[in-house]
Length: 465
Image 1: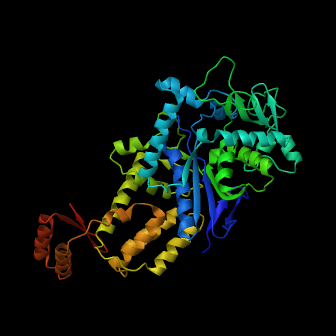
Image 2: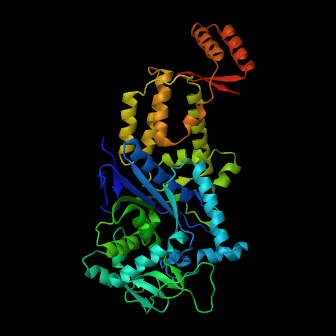
Image 3: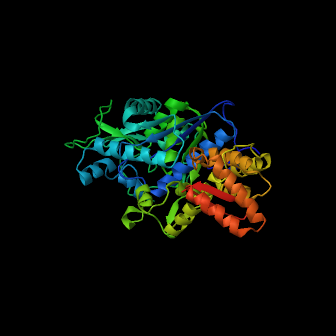
């Protein structure tokens, strides 16, 4: 029942073995805070949450960090070159009439509110790029001293050929090692190699940016990739266990992060396990702000849907497979989650013993590369099992929820009075004896006292109206 993940680095499912037996270092690439986070992003952060919960569920001591990119990386990443285009923070500044720091704070705060709403595991710290500029400058300086970086008119660039001459392979996780000049974007003639990427960009002459800093090479701002290397290594060391992000980061950001980190430290591998979540489609097509379907948590709550239904919806598909979002599917997930809550609150006040058989079934699914669809199936199997007492069901569900994160523990405070419990038991006996008149009378008495009952195939659920 060992915990297994699909490792993008090795391209196979592997048994998880931490670098240190008593400690697991985990880092997730978080949001760039120039706009509201959409539900495609939230799928990635929910995956990170599930990985961290799975590690804890298996008894590991987890040290978890997530970055917040409050220095807007450039819009050119949409066309294949993250070193070109307009700074996203500067673009948002014009759109909203605020300065870049105000933009970053507003959307970072909104992200952290949504993070709590989705009951995602809080990292040890959210790491802000703007608070780690000296560390990024030091890392660039180290790479220059090692002969792995050079300066041209618009910035400092990582030298991929020099990196490969050191015995490393450039382009891990993707096909970047196959890129040739002109293959995807216009070639910058000053760069030594098409694959080279910016570590530090210079501010344009005569241009005053909100976010720019002095460096040994001139006033400028960090390249997109350098922050994650600098911050993850500061807090987790030159080598750590798990790095996560969306599948879009496999092509450029993560390979470049690996190269600059390994180049600076000579530590190979930089990260032992890379885990990537697949894209979220909308109504069978791609999601995008220009299409008007980059839905946010606000869109979900405005429709009266519990945001935690989004967690349930994500778990209906495997994280490595693209999932299709529709409002109908989310409504179905919302209804399913409501049924779980109803079952749970109807189990009574007593918390019994975790059922070993169901715990093992559930853990087997979770440990099999986060097989959440089948883990949810185990939950429903438990709820329908007539041979398990309500008290033991409740204990087992609470144990499952440390992994699922549906917030069941927060509703245990709704204590059903003993008087109501006895009336429900009496009504159950009346139903078994087919004394429908007396059963209906007891139902009305229960409802008059402020409680609602619902009969299922396996039990009677009681909850406060």
